[in-house]
Amino acid sequence: MPEQSGPSLGAIHARQSALADQHGAASDADRLLAEVLASAHAATRESVRRLDAIAEEIDRADLRRGDLGADTPMGARELHRFLVDKQREIARVVSDARELGRAKRSVLERLRAQYALPGS
Image 1 (cartoon, rainbow, N blue to C red):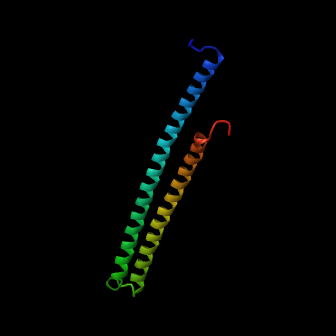
Image 2: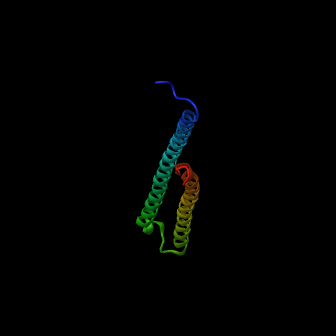
């Protein structure tokens, strides 16, 4: 059987090349997706750890409230200041998580195009 040549062989090679490029792009997208998900998971775990630590500090302060003199004006101010500080820490954790979420969403939206089928 003679070796094929001409436009059909060229078309096959072009299609193979296009598919290889598409496969490479999908593989790159898969790697980036895995990195995004792993870092988001790690950040979520860190946020939970930070919130748990804040909760423990508040619980300890609540248990020591009598020792701190929270029933006196000065003790009440100290407790108030402590709780306001903890509220700021909580707000910072939430703010950091929102910022990270926006950044990850942006990356995921850019990735979507790499998973689109040609011609769709």
